[in-house]
Image (cartoon, rainbow, N blue to C red; front, side, top):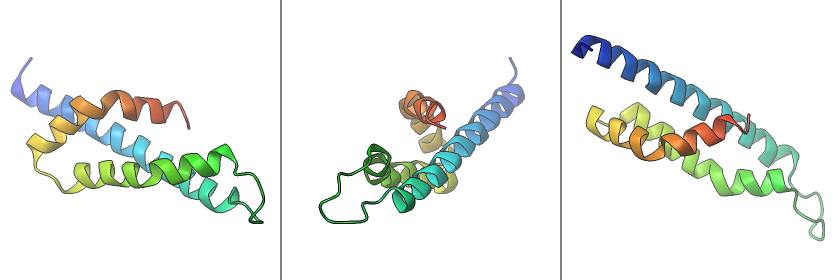
Length: 91
């Protein structure tokens, strides 16, 4: 495999992961707003809890993919690829 095709494949993978993160972020924002408890004594919906738990992590991952040098982005995809794939399953 040539260096150019490796770079193309990496670029495609990065775009797919960023798209998954963006879609999941929007879903989490929706859940945070629409499933928030209406009364203090109301039980918290699991989607609301998931939104509170994961929103900042997803935004962090997106920031790394947008603003970090290539080496850090590659490292992130190697270390968090399974996590991101799991988010795809939540969509």
